[in-house]
Image (cartoon, rainbow, N blue to C red):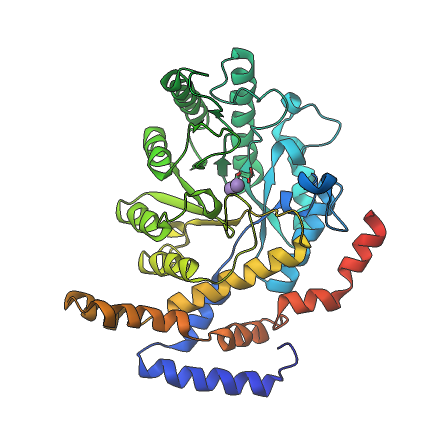
Length: 413
Ligand code: AFD
Ligand code: MN
Ligand code: MN
């Protein structure tokens, strides 16, 4: 694909443009919106911890420190033009010689300057609530000193987000139980809510708190923030500067994520995504432009929360993946490309025609109209957009030819 000439791209773009014009879709508008779309990449995908199974196998060339992670993130942005920010995980990305509970906001000024020199910037700040001492839970731990340490940690993370990033803090907690009877379930949840309120109270202005939910893990009997409903309730408790973080991998089989997205938008709540693909459970595989991702982007586009004229209306878009086997930089490039494909497909959907069919209760024609977007090969739009931005037509193929992987394997292994 990357062997296509400029003339071949323009030809394919022109043919698709005529098809779409017939349905009242302006391909140039779609292209410009695809150019506008940005997604954060997670620092933690590039290295820093073993795969867990397979004897701690790590794909070759893992980033061995925070600056290496930032260089890898910058490479993704260089090849896609769509990943200008990197989400940071404070417990993992703090200076190595600084104790977890001794982190201070200004310790992140220098690494942020380094990120900016690389052409990227910091994005969401993640408190790290699942390291040593959190085996009985984090903000709902039965051990007061653990709760206190992690409440302080979250408040520092809010200060880092406000002073050294874009003000976004995303919370995922490992709080749950493994057996019935292990804990008083409501008392556990009550401790967590009190902690959240203290954090939000301390970080009143300039911070957007995004509460992430997960069906299970590490707790296998119960999880305190287990689903979109709980996360919504906690976000509502925290007030206007809080929202719900939807991680694709965190749902039971069959849960309709597009419905969750439509509800959050429809009720005026702020939202955000941790994009990945869930096959069996929380495996955090790379994003694929599948039908569920298309349905989600159709809701985001219809809801005006992606590539909005007013950037304030946009949701927070982040990738969260770290599957244990594949080359992770290539996997993240694949995710960015897949998200752009899903967005473009959602933008070529003829919404007017779809609404007519919906209002006439024409179920199958409506389904077929909806599927027309999904079935459209929108790659000419991505290719034209990338041509105009002087970017490679295929970022994954470009990475293989780039020489960066060979270099980091020599440097790091
Ligand atoms: C794990 C959790 C959750 C969280 C991520 C980064 O399941 O998705 O967002 O770690 O903290 O994947
Ligand atoms: Mn996540
Ligand atoms: Mn996860």
